[in-house]
Length: 206
Image (cartoon, helix red, strand yellow):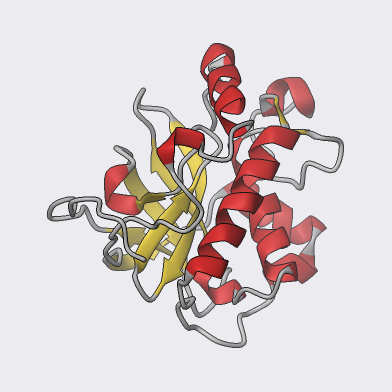
């Protein structure tokens, strides 16, 4: 699924060494909107295999509520996003597992896009964030390739944690075409995502 650009990845990782990566401070969050969810969709086959190996990671959510976004939560999201992006070495599934597509936790320090997102989701749940607001999401990236990111549903809109981007962005500002994501009610149910009408202007909220 994932496309790797080693030079681009190295550039982003160099930015992550700075506490002001991509000009984003931990106490600033851009304005976002909520994604429009449409019809039910088929879960990715890689996700189905992941749930068979890690059934505890795919349990039904106990609460479908957005995360209250404040400065502490924004700092947590940035810290986890930066740390996972820094720590995991990008490797395609074919080179890593010998198969075209496999979703897994990068326990050996290697993985591709969905593995970054799965690890971020797991860590944030362990940090106390509501699992129903941490949604695996499939998109088409800038080069027209399949890509996976983690969507964070908050009371201020939907944001994206991405291994190809240092900054956490509103879903409308990634430049990606959104395809489908997990349901807030049940992680095993997936739904298509509508195209945003327009991207809101990014402004700092404090």
